[in-house]
Image (cartoon, rainbow, N blue to C red; front, side, top):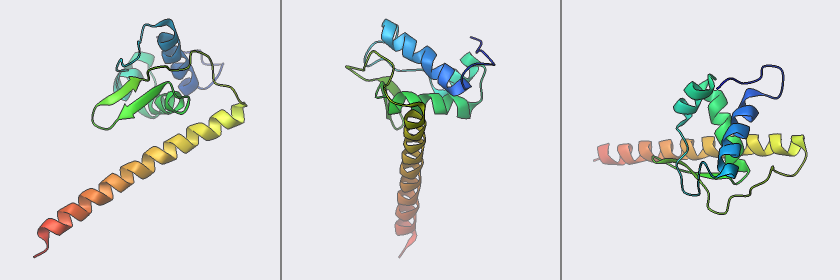
Length: 121
């Protein structure tokens, strides 16, 4: 699928396309959405752009992510565009990305601590 180069950012266009699939029922509640890599291939965008699209959908409450399993359509997902200013949506997107990064770092620290504990006499 090709994106429009002169309209909104690619990440929002990808999020909009997936949102449309959720709203139409093509992606039903509980359905797994394609991986970030698959989304990047499908929409011919960078992996980080696809990741941003997933973050947008997560911040809107349309999907949830289960570590190691993937992202899934949330049951009872709102069927309309999010309300609020573009600035609010942008801030929410960045906050979600920061939360995901902090969780990833916390998981890495826990793994390192566990490995250090096993090596200590």
